[in-house]
Image (cartoon, rainbow, N blue to C red; front, side, top):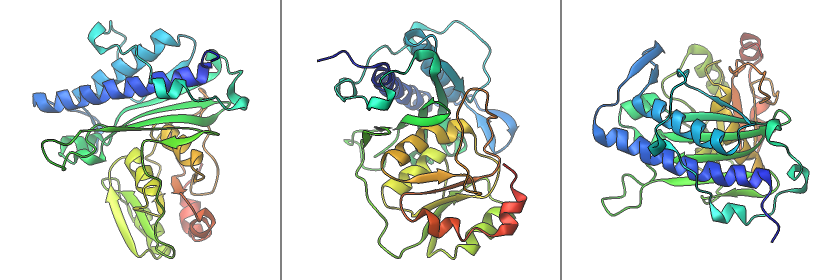
Length: 307
């Protein structure tokens, strides 16, 4: 067998790194002291888990792929990273997959890796553990082409013997793995949206879509999982709160299974390293029937959100 391409090595490494991240997330929670710091306010928190996981992911990936650009959510001072935080394994199953032809010639310096060490921090501090994800998104040419989403607490309500956590991964042109792709029953309109960042605009936008029901959960990673597992038909967030590290990994996985994510105006997200971090024109994502939802976003909402 030919040795795995750069892209498949990066994804296989990100998979192992995300599994390591999940053990850190669980360990911090089990230790009891979350070390919570407010960043810009009570809904924008950082914990010891955010800090340790980001150090672990960025240091582990930098060691293997020193020329790639890695952008993490947390603004951390440069410091020596404890060897215990380094993960140098690869997921063998991913290394065995054939890289799509259009990505075989990628150079390390052309990759931008977007990292959200703990997506759903507020929910983590409140014990809503199934909302929490670790996100590692891989972009090339400004597009999200591969992603890893780990849910450290997947299955946590299934009892003491349950295996905790799972890792979902995907590459454009290969598909996405680690979950059962399911669609919402035909004709059902279930909207998933923010739990802690609501506003009049967010609510007006959702009302205009006239949904059968609304699910309010934390974390962008978690919301995309609701779409690919058939629990929701559209993820709608008419507000500027979401960032590139929230959407890069989920976008790659959603696109790998034929879904679509854009801002509220229908513009695709750009992930080159110079791009601004804020997705200031909100988010609209679906697994199927994107046009149905896009055509119903009110103009008043669009006018309020400038890309």
